[in-house]
Length: 136
Image (cartoon, rainbow, N blue to C red; front, side, top):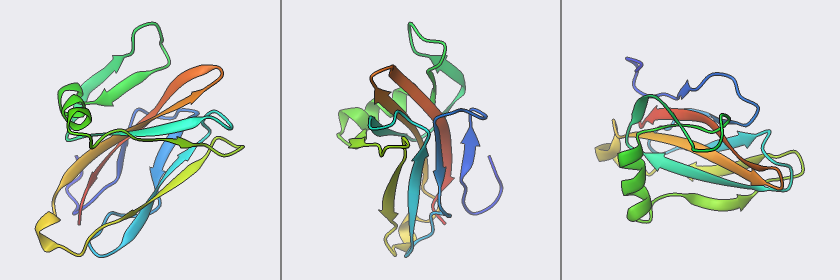
């Protein structure tokens, strides 16, 4: 993980369906989580976790769907209703931008999150790269 105050750091290498951040997650500011090259007119869901796996777990029945999130913490986020965010509609190019406002609360500086997205459409489901970030 980077030594700097905040990420993002991407895990998973290049992939058609990708997730990026428009800027660093800093208190008192906003940034966008951007999905690109998903299923045109399909849906995206953003999943959260508090950690990353040492190596990806491949979803059963597919070599194209690696899960980089720590499964135990991702399932805990799902159980508490904090994840997934969506499903949300992808545009005609398979893109979506989710605005995130970071509260101006110094106590959250240093909080770490991991996120990964799924794109669902008529041809199935694909996963994006994963993003690790630290609030600065």
